[in-house]
Length: 128
Image 1 (cartoon, rainbow, N blue to C red):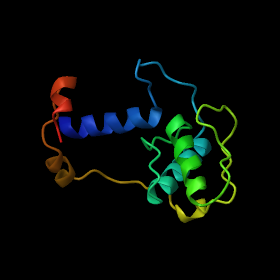
Image 2: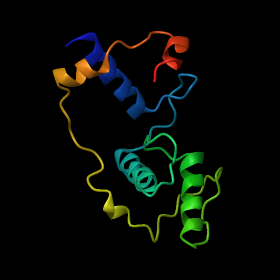
Image 3: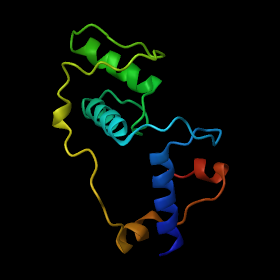
Image 4: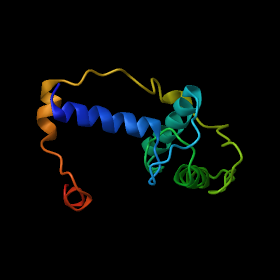
């Protein structure tokens, strides 16, 4: 396995695990919760109400996107951005997002299309 494949796999694993900006691991969500939050985030993104990073976790941007989606549909907002209450997904056609996850084998063509990845934040910021 080449270094690019290892980097992609590592980055994917880090995003699935959900490390914070400070490197600390947040409270671990169970697989079902991650799948349902991911389903909601994909649903909102497909409806052009971007929830921010699609990471399978409850967050401020997901809640804001859901509130804006409901307002756009003429529905009352049920979420507040910083609330700790569970997200109310009633009335949403979340079943339209299926499957949520699929298995994918990275190919040599995939690795070849990535190119070299910069090592430092300053260089990474310049990559389009």
